[in-house]
Length: 124
Image 1 (cartoon, rainbow, N blue to C red):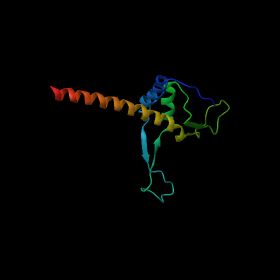
Image 2 (image 1 turned 30 degrees about the vertical axis):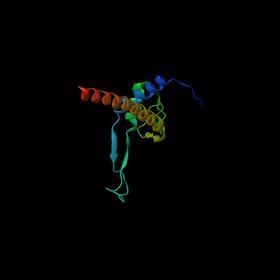
Image 3 (image 1 turned 135 degrees about the vertical axis):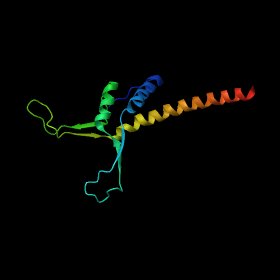
Image 4 (image 1 turned 180 degrees about the vertical axis):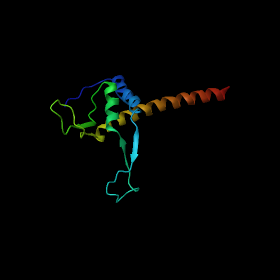
């Protein structure tokens, strides 16, 4: 693995675009206890991997958080329907931290602007 230094603008763009696109993936809260031992008591929260994959592809990148397991393929290479998608939520952490940092900086700027406008209005 190699790391490349990038300027602040590139980082902001790299974070801002996914933040806008991730809104397209629906957050889910479901009860999926197959043995019914915790039915109605325990929920799982997350996203549909296919929606996350589509959002990433629409942004033009291969997101490592989407994991695809092709179990059976026919002779033509086409999946036979029992494939599985999963999400590696650890891959969401860095982009989310970056998004929080970016949004916090924007909030700080907006709060300063609001404070200036409030002072100017009070001075009139």
